[in-house]
Amino acid sequence: MKKNIFLLLIVLLLVIVPFYIQENAEFAGADSQAEEAIIEMNPNYTPWFESIYEPASGEIETLLFSLQAALGAAFIGYYIGYKKGKSGNTR
Amino acid sequence: MKKNLSFYLLLSLFFLLALFTPERIYAMHIMEGYLPPGWCIFWSLVSLPFFILGILKIKQLIADHQENLMLIGVGGAFSFVLSALKLPSLTGSTSHATGIGLGAILFGPFVMTVVGSIVLLFQALLLAHGGITTLGANVFSMAVVGSLVAYGIYAGCKKLNISLKISVFLAASLGDLATYMVTSGQLALAFPDANSGFIGAFTKFMSIFAITQIPLAIAEGILTVLIIDILYKYNKENLHIFQKSNIRKGVN
Image (cartoon, one colour):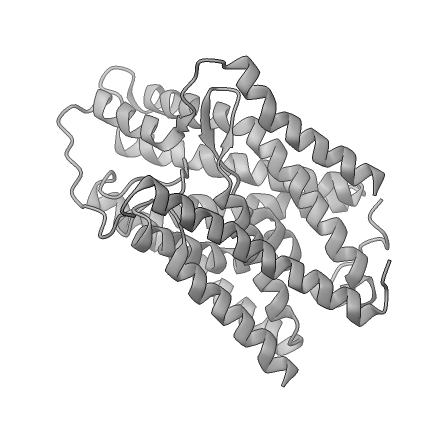
């Protein structure tokens, strides 16, 4: 248990430290940078297919994100609880 | 009744996720339309056999033991949670983990090819992320190579009697990194640099993806260790069902 808390702290550090190292960075997605790189190297390339659907706004996107994380976490939590109850192990 | 319950739960989870999967900043996703048609077909064909193997393996797992379906669901759910969390990286951009490693460790490499393909398809259809045309290429990098590398590293570590936690950590983090390296390679093959050719382009894409990904790969490794630790705590008694190997009891 102690070990796991220590491991979680490392994850937290990994996530927090970048903000101190890169104080003025935009923290944009890496894939949009790739798009720019492709266009830079191949100015004549035009994408030959468009996305069928796009979320209406950044807010809608955020809503869907939270929902997705919540659903995934809920399922994992349900499974662990189910196993815990079944094993009669209620530590 | 109980058997059906877990099946319906899994089904509804995937259905809900299909409805509500948000856009992700998945650096490993090649964007819709950003891969010439020939390459799109090529990568789809390369991925197909792995996908079929995965379907067969899932059928067999469920036939073996009903509860495996739920555990596969946990593998899928873990992948969804991790990909919902865009994490800042040392390079000042964001990316995120894949969550493929967990399922690869539990079920072998091919099950996650199928689960990962489902994830990628949702994204392509509903999030404007990745793409239908680039699906084959994205499946290959994340759900074929990422999954194979994670499983391979895990199996290798086990042969060497390396402790379970360290094996899992290495498997999940290196599988994550491998995904990004493959994506860089795929883009470089399709878009070689005019002056420096494939190598130049590969270096460029790697510098965008891989360096950003290193701290996140470490985070993915640690999170996978934590979830495996929890799963094993309550699955000790029927562990042999999930893995035909003899993992030492206890995770330390």
